[in-house]
Image 1 (cartoon, rainbow, N blue to C red):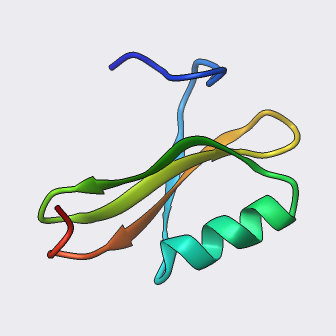
Image 2: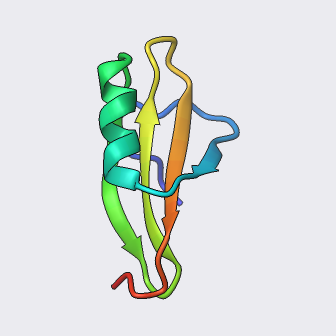
Length: 68
């Protein structure tokens, strides 16, 4: 899978959250930038990728079987 934007190579940890929009906003308020906008993983949930101020990329995932 091709990495988007300025995502550095390496492992990306993804964190399960109950509210992806709320946690994305909290991460942005703490200095993170969005690397990949929220997208559906059909039948699983929603995910996005962010980068913290130290250039560490991490993912957020909200489980939602109705995601399309």
